[in-house]
Length: 96
Image (cartoon, rainbow, N blue to C red; front, side, top):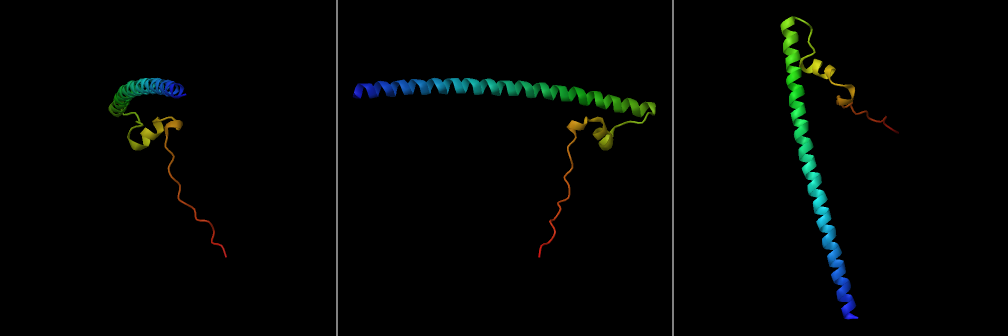
């Protein structure tokens, strides 16, 4: 009976170790992927920002109306990328 309990304990320990190893491998993989994607995002953001700066500079030199600055930047972004402004909180009508 004790031998069976010890064998069961060893089997449970082995399974737990296996699960721990698999979980850590997946976590490390996801973490590496996150770092890779973040780097790609930063590079793409820098590239687009540089292009946007060139467009603003060119339009300023040619006398064309530019969509630069805070108002123009909001217009240049797609609607999905715009952050909604918070609305003023409305108080419920005072009850009796």
